[in-house]
Image 1 (cartoon, rainbow, N blue to C red):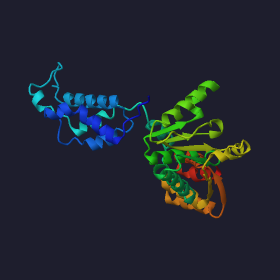
Image 2 (cartoon, one colour):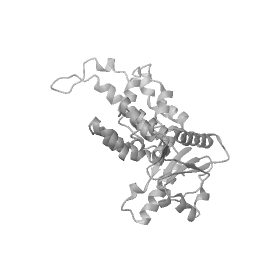
Image 3 (cartoon, rainbow, N blue to C red):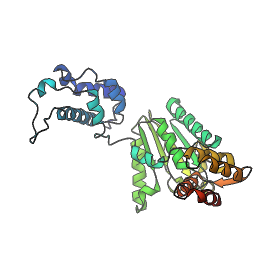
Image 4 (cartoon, rainbow, N blue to C red):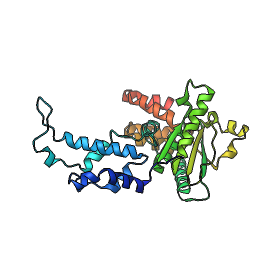
Length: 319
């Protein structure tokens, strides 16, 4: 028998149970909001919530330790001890759930932020939000799959990560070949299977399968569970030849920067060039067709940032 993670109501009850003694003895401050804490403890198991309460107690005790050559509590520490909401918030920095979202991993993919350089980017984000809403509200489509495709360096993975972050789903993971370098085929299959098996335990899940032409195998979630699968690829033609496009509910295309106005929108947002430099670049690119991935453009801009002003425009335009 598998016991799933507690929902928000369940987490409220667990927090209430583990803070009962504090409350009865007047050690729980009135500013402690259990409903807020239950929201902040998404993906926490009962044992992890108990650990969080213990950590908050320790933080509150540390405030009462005398700053002397020896470690000792103040004489009136028992009377002064109060566990506050801020103690729980600080404890959340140390106590992390073993199950759920990988915040650090997603921050890696959107480290430079999302530059909304025009309608193509906005369209991708809007379509992603619609799919997230569909997963949350529809009872007829528990499994929604989308392929985010486009040329290399166009920002597919960053946009997919942004959509997943915005979903606020309890379980959000990236399944990437980069994380499986050196794995033999059986180990790869096992790693992928674990990610999907974990996703099926959560009421709402999102998995990003990066470079999906190298990794693909999933099934519908069990009853009462919903899953959004976001695949990314630079080789839509390969998936078409392999007859794999039909496994996706929809396909979202990510474009390269192709117009001068879109290029200028990116450059203006980065605040690297001055007005004179921007005007010169705008004149040089006006009316011309471009074809540049936003990832490559960001690298070029960072190179230009290191150059002397007199050489930046020439080098940037030449690239």
